[in-house]
Each structure stands twice: as C-alpha cells, then as structure tokens.
Amino acid sequence: MILEELKTYRRDLHQIPELGFDLFKTHQYVKDKLISFGYEPKVYAKTGLVAVKKGKSKKAVAFRADMDALPVKEATNVSFKSLHEGKMHACGHDGHTAMLLGFAHYVSLQPTPNETIVFLFQPAEEGPGGAKVMIEEGALSDYFVTKVFGLHLFPGLDEGLVGIKDGPMLARNAEFDFDIIGVSSHGAQPHQGKDAVLAASMLVTLFNQIISRYIDPLEPAVITTGTINGGEARNIISNKVSISGTIRAFNDDIFETLKQKMNDMISGVKIAYGVDITGAIVDYYPAVINDSHLYHVVKKSLDPKVIVDIKPYTFSEDFAYYQKAVPGIFSFIGTKNIEKDYIHPLHSNYFNFDEKVLVNGYNFYINVCKTLGIY
Image (cartoon, rainbow, N blue to C red; front, side, top):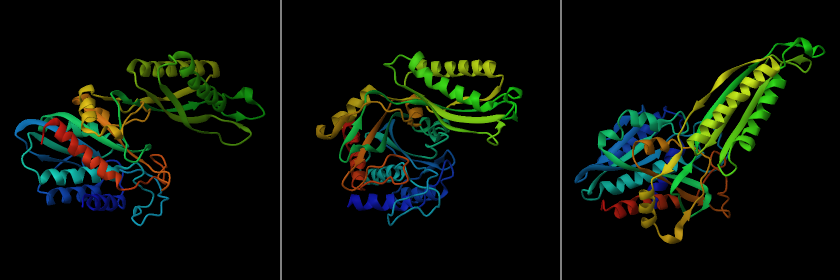
C-alpha cells in the first residue's frame, strides 16, 4: 500500500534531520532507495541527488524535492522524533522527499515514458540556496529539462486541498545586517558620546516608514527588523548596536526601491547622529513566478473540488532558481487539520501533519504526467 511506503520514508527521514549542504545520512538514505528502485543516481551540490528514467524523447520534465531540515529543537511527542538534538524537519521537507521517492518508485515500475523524467533531490533550500548550485552544476542542462514541478506541504490549507497560483506566488527576499558604531561615554555626560542606541532606534523607525510612504499601497512589500542587540550597561552611552532583518517583494522594481530607500535612510542617520554604519543588504532568492501554461496543466490534472486558487504569500523559496532556468510551477499540498491539532505553521517546533496527505502529493505527480501525455 502506497501510504505505508510513504510513511516509512517520511518517518525514517524525520529522525535524521540535517542542515544545509551537510545531509550525509539523508543523502545515503535517498541514494540507497533510488538504487533499490533500479536508478543510477548522480551527485550534485555536495549531497544532492539526481535520478533519471529515460524516455522516448530527449526532452525531460523534472520533479524536485528539498531534503534539508532546520536548527529547531523538536517539541512534538511522535514516536519517530528527531534523533539529532537541536535539529528538526519543521518545514515538511521529510514529507517532500518521501513523496518524490514514492513517485520515483512508481515510475521505475512503468514502461518507457514519452518524455524523460528527472527526479531532483536538493539540499540547502533553507539556506544558502541549494537549487542555484544544483543548476550551476548541470542538474537541469545535463538532462535537457524543459519544465519543472515542485510541491510544498502547507498548514495554511485544509487537508485534501491543493493550492495553485498563476504568476507571482512567493516573494523575492534579501537579508540585512548592520552595525551602528558610535562613541562611548558616561550616561551622565551623553554630549561626550555618539549614541549608537539612539541612532539604531531611529534607523529601525525609518525603515518601517519606507513601505507606508514610498511604496504603492497596492504593491505587497515587507521590511522586518528582527533583531537588535547592543549596549554595555544602563549608565553608558553605547558605542555599538547591531540590527538584522529581512525584506520581501514580488516586483523587482519595488524590491530595488526598498533597498535604495534603506540606503538613503542609513546615509541620513550617519549624518544626523554622527555615527558610522557598516554592513550590507544581501540578496537571496528571486520571486517564485509560476508559468501560466504549466498552471493550466496542473489545474487540468486535479479534481476541481480540491483546487484552491491561492493568493501570493511573502514566503521565499529557492525553487525560484529553477524557474529562472526553465518554465516551472510550485504548488501547495494542504495539511491543516484542526481536530488533530495539525495547525502549527511552517518552521514551528510543533509542526506535524497526517501522513495520508503524502498520497495527495504522490498522486499529484502521477496525474501531471498523465496530463502531459508522458504516460
């Protein structure tokens, strides 16, 4: 029974969460399964794997699963709890890998497809972007991939539903880290110092005004300062404060405006408070923008009763890099179940789901292949 197979994969993987590109146990587990199905997997991006079912056509369709976990201490009480302290599959990547392994097993038992099918098992989605490395090392071009599909388990949708979106779906993102450098002095003689706390506070306030005063209110955008650290004692003017955060937008012009205005604010605070500010805004993932033709392929492949045309979300996903290389579409598999308390968001240390939803992803892949005429 396919559900039992998928549950086994998911539970085995859930117990061995690993981070970034260092997915050595996960890599070996997936590799062993693929070999047992008759594939000859090749290594990309240090611990990524690509398996191929050759078709009648040289053209290929790719299906991708991310395999990495998060530095989160698991708080669930499941029997297959993480064995790696401080690490957890809190974003469902164990489920993604299980679904694609199940699909790869299914394909291995089928006759020669009309198009080559490529299975992408990717590290480092949570950072720093394993998809980009996979592509640079040839994971698409080596197999003449012309389109790519990806799935993500999602507690924002009820079990049994599939979220699809034509066009922009997930935001482009960047992260910022800045050090505000002042001059220390006694708190009773503030005029002798340059107050890094005061300057940092103003900088955070100004960042928060950018969206409301420089961006069209109909354009989605986010600037979040997530950390602020500094100071030595209650009666000392601080000489250093560090801040960090993230920015999100769907439109590239809006994204560049956010960065430009942030740099303008930094220049103004440096002059106004006499401080120095070092650091940078570092671009990470592009926006996930779904191909319109593939959106209609997916829509046609699904039971109309399970389809939800979702709004865009300001999450980010390195699946976007695949879409920069070839047409692609990313979709959500609903996991929300209030009665069973499967309501916790992605990245929560309580995140979990009823494993029957893995069959929905497995069937998604099969039905897409049928709609494309691959089988």
